[in-house]
Amino acid sequence: MQYDGYIKIYQTFVHADPDLYGEVFVLVSQGKYPAGGRGRTYTNIVFFMNRTIHQELIGGVDSPDEGCLYKSFGVPGKPCLILSLAFVAKLYPGGIGFCT
Image (cartoon, rainbow, N blue to C red; front, side):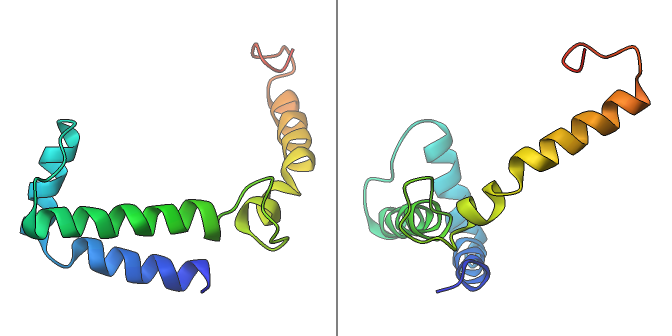
């Protein structure tokens, strides 16, 4: 599944029941995990979907998928950083700490 489609499903699920979301959010914010019932099921599904997003769809340097988001956006990273630093250097010829 494509990242965009999965994110839409994820967001729809997460926000479908605002009361349940609020209950679980409060517990997780306190470092607790729902004891059971709907809260536990909801949390398990959300955590599973997060894992899918971060480990399968976004990927990483060790991902076998050359089209994963990490590799797709990581490729232009260094040239973009060089361009950004050159742009900042023109705006602030005296330097601003990290560009000196």
